[in-house]
Image 1 (cartoon, rainbow, N blue to C red):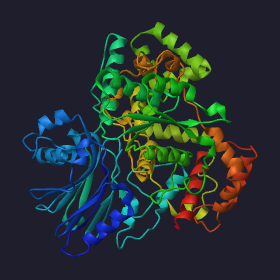
Image 2: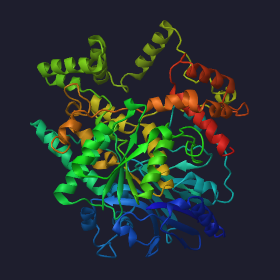
Image 3: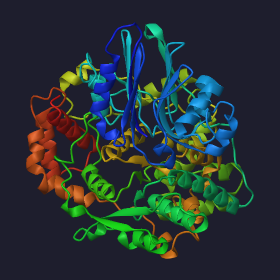
Image 4: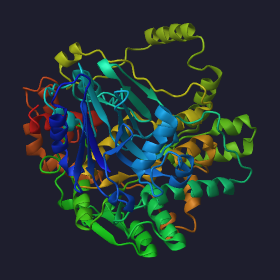
Length: 630
């Protein structure tokens, strides 16, 4: 861990060592434990070290072995299984994570990423074949960007590293800006700069001489894998087993581990499982420290009544973070990084928590951001109960869902039965000509919908960009309406962007970002089981709540709920930051219509209109361009 970069010149010209050095300097915070570079005739590869595990402390990268050069930002899990499979390719009996990756490449070649469990981004330069192979983990928890132009390939953890290389212009990508302003975050390989691309999650890259290259998806869930038990308790036990593996793997640290602990299910589950592992088999790190937001005035946002029950139960060090003293919008901490204009509403708040954790020596910080995707999202599977003839159970579920959601029964039937039934009887790829004809008739019979474009997007930008239609790559042979919904939720483009933003934010504070909910094994399990085992009795995350029984104090387990710090943002938006926000609406910004933004913001402050996430994106774009002189 925690960063890498490199430059390849396909022709034998100088400059690659200088480029690699400049790229490393641009993200020096990724290498608090040293920066090392290997240089050859046509390539230079650099590793920026952040030591988290004991293996990291004895690891030396780049690894150079028999014509191969490897740099990796990685935490490899299920190490014993992998080590037994590649023992003939290993150079040592006590391999580091990087050693295991290189051995896997020696055994399986470019198929090796599919055999790796964990969070990783790596690049391997083959001096004999003069080619570069690179890959990212399935959920994209480690970043990797690249630029291939003429006879040169650049790659790095951060976009800013590529921008630091000679002859790389910082030209903003107008199609990406146009997509972003419309709350679209795909295609996932796009970045906000021309000719710089992101290697998509679960993808590999092979670049060869003369600038030819290809990328491909190396892993996906197995659509034919189904897990079925007769007893619901077996689903709970299996989930607990997989979740324990996910948490245990990320506790492997020689330094203290931190956790942002709220009163919600996702982070509470991590803390409780870590505490359970601490008591039953010893925790894998010196200590787990927790950090929670403290609200003295906006007490409706405070979750410590729940979170402290967990920390008291397991004797975890607990640090409250004064949330109300944080300025959310504007410098020094409420400013997007140079890589992308996107930032969370609460970036400055997270930064304050990360600064405190850094003071405590934390090198790995947990978050539960993917929990909603894997076991939440209010995904119903009533159609399976109907198909199996479980009418009594179905009626009970409908009543519980009606009570939990407050939806009229008609709307509930449409949402949980009619839509999935229609999708099964009439799939999207069935009779496409007839479907399109009916769509045209329907469009003529109803008023034209309002434009989806935000009014503050400039006319010039609208006229200059023609975006591809949104596309979700759900495997065609993944059967079941609810399973497909789960798959789409897990692979939401916005969440992938949030993961990269989180990783960069944590890295700037010299920490690695970890989320057990993003574990590949957990995702495979969540897609393979019946979805009505996840959402049951009208209760979102029912499976997780059952699994926590006995691990979490009952007073906390029965009160787990998500509380939003939205009032803090509202106060900032309406009062604290109003003068600063007006300065960002610059009429010289060719992407935005400043008059529309000013008008909306005025209405928003006076309560005449509701919050529009697209406005937040436009505000972030304005701050980004202003502070980075773009």
